[in-house]
Length: 471
Ligand SMILES: [Zn+2]
Image 1 (tube, rainbow, N blue to C red):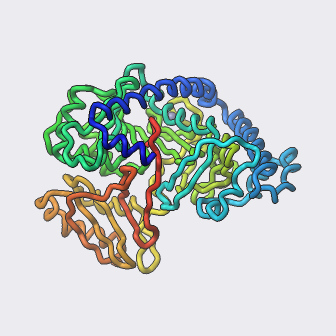
Image 2: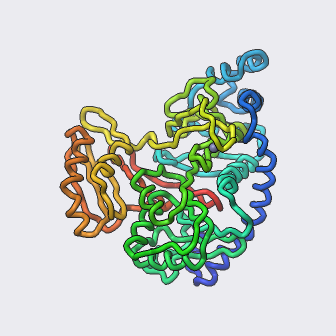
Image 3: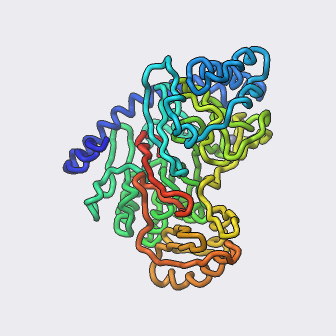
């Protein structure tokens, strides 16, 4: 990967376009596989609840039986094997321990099944800052991609639609500080790859003009990247000259202040997708704004109202036999809504939007944990506009720095009111410093976080998420 990236970076632009298009050709063949998989699971979208439960029960039983038999860590639970025949599988599941990245990292090989072919290896850290390596069989990997693709299908995708991406694609070398064209085009699979890393007022103007020319059906991006782009587009007087079908986002929660500017600029509905790099859980937002769990990749405790939800949520794979994650905490709190009936007609269980990444909050000296949504409130409360990007960093026990990427006038306009409102949100326990900055640190993946708590973890991003529809 590193060598390929170096080769790509050192190539002239026409060669880079060639590489991007070669990747596009490979994608085309994968689209066929995804479509096939999606046809196979289409019936699950409208199953009655009892049918859903039976489907999940059968898969859970199979996975638990397999783990107890073939996965070293679970062999000590061999006594439960007989129970699988006559007890509720949800009851049996409850007897297995809750796991997470840290517990599995103590001895990762103990979680690998001994009887499986090597599969796809994927590294992830999510927002928890803990590097994690997951082994997946090829089908689980493919299913994960297909489920992301399904959101686009739900949103009315038609063959020939262009999709613009503003995610972590490293398509423009970083040494090129001011690229003439901050994008690469793949004609085969109709993708526009914008460089999240090169967003400035100048490149945004070029991107705006290019979008008006190319007229993609969809724009997908991280909320933070979309937010920055939209602020810049507003500054340059950008006007949409076509109708966008949807804006897509994932990987970060979408905060209210981000949603406002994105809607204002792109004049389209925004649809999210929640998924984990381990591909054990995913939920796509339908036209009615509800997040539907996929039902087929993993089981979230609480999704049927049968087991109580654990915090952070515990998820069990329904497909990956190579390294079966069981009662695995991806790190997010997933609020299941088992009795919600969605007007879209899909019966897939609904979850609330994931607002709080479990690890991301400010901790005050008295031990209060302040969630991002509360911090955001301090911004909203002041109706703060025209800030390109903001980041709240807990530097030490009682210091919070709020970084604002804004011009001098905007900065001075909000500095004092924000200091006051942030102070209130932290119950007067924190020293708040408002700092003007030209840029907010973007991590290797192209993501940036709204709240960084230096007290809790040092974030090392090792995500290799370069899959066609993932971000
Ligand atoms: Zn729905």
